[in-house]
Length: 531
Image 1 (cartoon, helix red, strand yellow):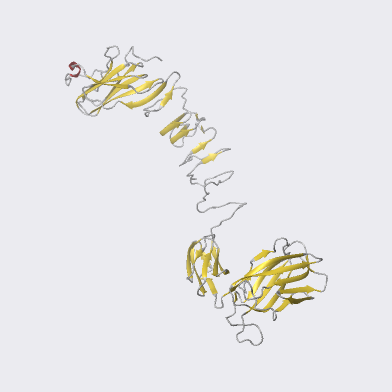
Image 2 (cartoon, rainbow, N blue to C red):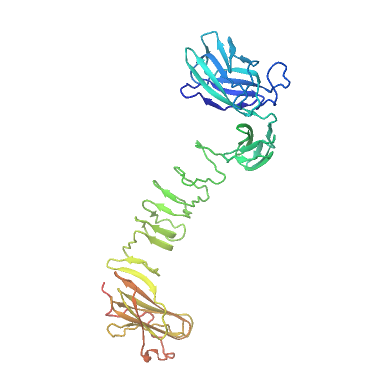
């Protein structure tokens, strides 16, 4: 016999039963009678018979004063009815002084005393046997009604099923009932034809295994109960088997550890969840964070090896660098990063900051003393006390022997640089201020007998025109011109096209001695912008 726990409270307007009930059937499941079987004296074909045994328990806090108990067994030939007849059914109950009687489809148990008290934790059993089962497969509702001291009553329903005469779903078992974590298990069973079978386990979606009698389950990590459900029409039956996993993975809603939690592998926090702790201590190794550390209160302290963050490091307040910390050889008080993004706020460094990648300040970067730059990217700005300094693209498309003319749209600087790549290089770059017809040129080139680099700069006011020329006579050399704007307005100069230069400017100068020429010519006087 197998427990069936399919119960339902009484109908609307009726109090639920005070006792809890379980139903055992013999056979399990109940099977219908063969066609032609009848209930009566000396039938040609005997009907299939069933026994119902009910176990009732008082799981409440108060005693139940029971004076009457009845069960309604639907009788007839329909799928929703169980018995062909109840005339020969036999009924018994475990309570002393109680007797059974039948009225139609209802079998009632009563006592001659005012009531029998069922104390908390106690219970009773009653059974009805020799029930001739009808011929139709289907689900049957059995209605139980309790009568209490006085006129009180409560009820509930228990459902059971009738299966085909040749139905079976047996032998559900596992080849091993105890396995290691990550091991596999093979489930087997036997079934009759026409049965729809479904396998349930471990919170997985139901798996249709109809037509099969074997299933291999791999990588089992937790102790698991497997349920095999067989269905015919509207009736179902369930078989189960338990497989224990040694050293299983543990899934709990809440875990409280009073002493040490020793994790031999990874501790993974799901997306959107938090790890809350007063202290995180690395035991001689690294603590790796591949997302965001948000420190809302207190301090994050690390040892001499420092802290390595692969994602953003979001600091809500100040980031203070200890000037005595020189663990990475970057100098006292140095904070070394690849990319540092500063949202509106402050980064205070007691000595200095070294950025090997990009330094991006979304709220602006203010330098109270001086800022030394090797280069600036196009479009970036530095804010001084009087002007903004903005770097721009170098001039491109400089044809040799041609003057390229421009107009300055802001105050700014033009500077030229020659970098000689080999011995014997001879080259020249010129910058002309055209608006006052004055040639203010800076001759820049290396000494002819050694590789070198030279440069010169002139200042221009907004609206002034200027020209650039370049000439290379021999050797490997790189010549470039750049514009740096000062102040508001369109930062890039406007091109005015090209023009000619007098032939004297490009006379062969291969024999000219440049050894005494200045390597870094001064800024030309009289043409500096205001400020």
